[in-house]
Every structure is written in structure tokens, then in C-alpha cells.
Image (cartoon, rainbow, N blue to C red; front, side, top):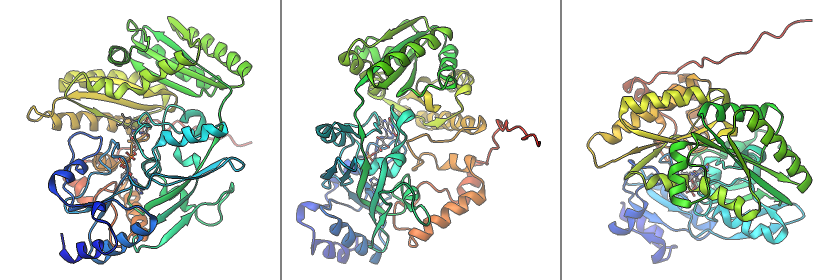
Length: 483
Ligand SMILES: Cc1cc2nc3c(=O)[nH]c(=O)nc-3n(C[C@H](O)[C@H](O)[C@H](O)COP(=O)(O)OP(=O)(O)OC[C@H]3O[C@@H](n4cnc5c(N)ncnc54)[C@H](O)[C@@H]3O)c2cc1C
């Protein structure tokens, strides 16, 4: 790392804000995704937006890439450092600056953990809706950068739908303020562009989130099925009846067993699949919706429907789902979580294909879904210490994502593209579409300073890896009759 660059940083950062020693740097080499790592030149711990402005200006001057890092729980390699880059960690920017109960908003720094926002908002009988299963650890800045989801996003929307304003530092060190506290935004909607931009366009320094009134009542049904297909059909059945559950999650038998052994949530380990269906709102409304959903679940073949009797049991049912990933971590040295979407009616077909792939690759896969959103999380269990097993796992994952595109879905539902899905981007998008992404990146970051090498594959990568755009096969639009 350039000595002059370090000298300039030392002129305004304290000694404990700069990490250069090799052993401490190791902590920042990877994120939550197995198999990818990089060695940064140094790690910086800014304590204010002003620190970030100065750091970015210096990195720009010395042409040193900046990889912004929240809590490092990302599952697509987004926060994995490019070798020699500067990792800019937001861990010290962890204050809730203001809660405004009249406007139902909170202004927070990017390093605030997701769950802390709802804990604070509870004092005002409010909550922040997007709740990734990593919410005890992940940062709101990371959530905005990934447009994260969670079990309650079916009803309440993703991060994008729950953020009203973002402040960020651009590649020249200027502060940009995106969004307005109103329903419409004059001009181009740059707030929507920055949400989900995976650290590629700017460093997010402050976020205003929307808060919602806490529901008076909530209950969850745990429904057991003897066939995975029946569970998948029940999901489509509930949605097509016009019900919008507060959560609609599915786990296959392998995942149910793993979770039950870990959390003891009271799950039915005899079932081939279980669904968790939540209703929230006014008490009478919840009871009515729960009855409706139980009727539909039984119609589609549920063998048992257990409704949570109190908040403790409801929390227990959800704790099982929220611990699906750590539970899987107990089954094998490594797991690889795939994150694709498909139309709900294709869930059964996808699971059959995954079974076939398990045999072909000789690797076990257990499944958890944000079923209401059609967002799949197959977890492939593997052992990275066995030669060639990671590469085989990657191929397995790529094949699942290719199929998602073929079925009319997408290569990511909420975890982002990062490093992991660069090849799959060649399958999802045409060359022209990828060029448009590059043009947007260039418009924000003309020196390619922020998170280089992520999200947008260069053409030669698609050619080298033989990854070609696939046309969806579910275009079922019928011609609109003319009258
Ligand atoms: C057990 C487990 C469960 C999970 N469950 C879910 C889930 O239910 N739903 C879901 O959507 N995800 C889930 N995730 C994935 C992950 O937690 C989310 O993607 C989360 O939003 C990442 O936040 P982070 O603070 O850890 O970000 P990091 O991993 O540190 O970074 C992620 C990306 O955001 C960028 N970034 C971070 N902060 C900023 C900033 N201030 N400005 C600009 N760019 C920034 C980084 O450069 C990187 O590209 C899960 C992960 C784990 C390990």
C-alpha cells in the first residue's frame, strides 16, 4: 500500500481506526459465503460521514479500490475484498439518530443492526418490517445495499419499499441525498437505483427508514404435508384466494429434521414438508384469516395444522425457520446457499430437478423457501477440504440458477449477485442489458473505485465460461382480444 496514502489517512484518523496488521486483517477476508476470499491492503473504521468523505477523496487520488463492509453476513461475496483494496467498515457508525413517531420514520447510521431498529421503535409501538433471518447481526447499510428481504416481506415489501431517504458519498467524495419524504419523487428515481447497488455506486452513510404500527395480534400456522408438491400447491392456493399472509415459508423434510434437532421448535419431523403461514392485524381479522388459511391448507392435503396458542409458541415456530442456516451448518463442514426465484407453480418441478442433481453431483441438498415470494434457498452440503468438492458444489448451484431463469424466474431473490453469481448474470441478461448496467456504474463511479469486479460480468468472462443468455420458457401472455 502506498506510504503517502497511509500518511494522508493518518492525518485525520486515530490509530485504532486503521488496521494494517496481517492477523487482524484476516477477519475481513470473506463474508458469509464459503469459498471466496481476498486480502485487503488495510481496513478503515470511520466514525463519521466526514471521515468517509475524506477517505473516499484520498482513495480516489491514489486510485485505490474501496470495498464497503457492513456486518459481513452477505451470502454472495459482495463484501469480499479485492486484493489490495481498502475495506471501509461501517461498524462504528452504529447510532439511531432520530425516531420520528409522527412521520413514522427513523434516521439511522449504516452500521446499525437491523433488529436494533425494531427494538428502539417498540418504545413508540412501531416496528421496521424487513426482517432478514440474519437480523441480529446484519447492518441496515448492508440491507439497503442488497435490497434485503425476510419472512415478512411478502406482506410488507423488501428494503426498497421501506426506505424513504438515503445519504451517500459518491466517488469524488461528495455527499448525495436521495429520496424525499413523500410518495412521489421528481426526476429520475435514484433512491431505487442505490437500493440494491451492492456497494458499487456509493458509500451509504445515513438511511431514513419507514416504520409501521405494531400489529395488535399475530398467529402462525404450522402445516404438515406428506408430499412436497402438495405443500407447493397449497402456497399457490393461498395466494390465489387473495390472502396476503404476513409470512408464508416452506421447509422440506431434510431441513425440518435439521432445524428440529437444533432448535426443538416443535416441528413435525414425520412431514415431507411443512409450511409456516402467518396472519397479523386486528385480533378478529387474524382469527378469520387463520381459519380461511387452515381450510385452504387442508383442501390441498395438509395432514396437520397447528395454530400457535400464544406469542411464545409463535416465536418458537419462527425461531426454527430463522435458524435454518445455522442448523444446516451442523450437518456438514460447509453449506452453499442458493438464492433464486421461480414462479410459485414451478416449485414442485424445481424440487424434482434438485433431487436429480443431488444424485448427479453426489451431494446432499436441503431446502427452505420464502415460498410466498417464490424465493428458493436450496442449501447444498459439502466439505471444502475435499479436493474438487467446492467446484462441484458451484456447478450444482449454477445449474439450479440456470433452471430458475429457464422457469421464468431470477438468479437472486434477495442475496444479491456479488462475486458468486457473475456467471449467472450472463445467463439472465443479454449483452446489451449488461452494457446498460456498466453505463450506469460508470455514470456514478467513473474511476471504478467502488467494489470493482462485482455484479457486472465482463463480456470475456461470459464467453470464456461459455455462459449464454437463456430465454425464459414461461411467457404465457395471451393476446389481448380487441373489441
Ligand atoms: C444466517 C443468515 C441468514 C440470512 N438471511 C437472510 C434473509 O432472510 N434475507 C436476506 O435478504 N438476506 C439474508 N442473509 C444475507 C445477509 O444477511 C444480507 O444480505 C444482509 O443485508 C447483509 O448485510 P451486512 O451488513 O452483513 O452486509 P455485508 O455482507 O457487509 O455487505 C453486503 C454488500 O453490501 C455492501 N455494503 C454494506 N454496507 C454498505 C454501505 N454502507 N454502503 C454501500 N454498500 C454497502 C457491501 O459492499 C456488499 O456488497 C442471511 C445471511 C446469513 C448469514
